[in-house]
Amino acid sequence: MTKAIFAILILILVAFVGIILLDRSELARKRSAIDTCWNGVDQAMRARAAILPKAIETAIESLGQNADVVRGLNGAYSAFAKSATRQQKMEANGKMDSAIAGLLSASRINAALARDRNFVRIKDEFTRAEDEVSSERSNYNEAIKSYNISLELFPKNLCASLFRYVRVEDYFTIEEGSKHGTVEGDWRKLVQQERNGEPAE
Image (tube, rainbow, N blue to C red; front, side, top):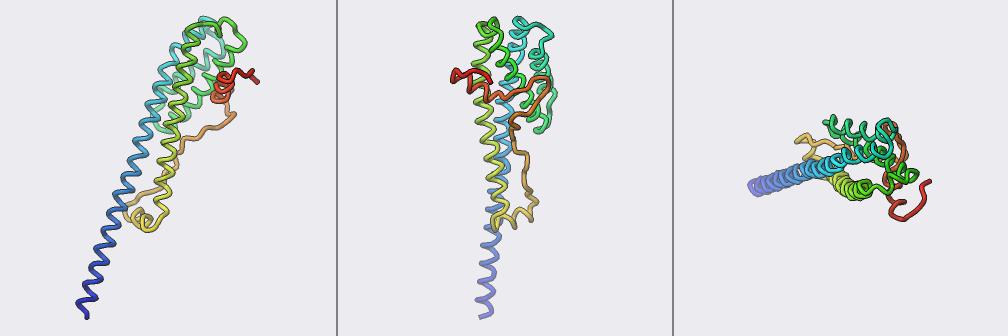
């Protein structure tokens, strides 16, 4: 009888260890997925930042070197080039949002800029780039959410404590109506208005 109980306990222990190891593997996979998704975000933001020099050149031709819009674009490009950490890149992305929104707003009141063929191409490039950033940002945030939820579930929470898996709070959020640099605006709203042919507010 004692041997039978001992054998049962051994089986329970083996099963528990197996579950813990499986949970550890899943947590590691989900934690790695966050980094993979961030790489997608980073690449999308880099692609958008690469459009800025052309936008700056076009803005200078129509608005002049000292225009606020040009300074905003230059500031956004510089901020992103200098960014290193995730938080810095997120903040730099916000500056790009506002600077590009400023350029789009300027085209509403500057006929020469609005008709410029380079600007039309650049506007389309920015729209596609913003869509890509938005998609990658959503994937990244979902990866964090999935990982954090797993940390709260039994027995994964025990595994997380044993192997020091902690919550990730670096969500990529967008502050609507925030002000970045010298240009104030909401890129997503302005792009949607442009697509719908609506007047600027």
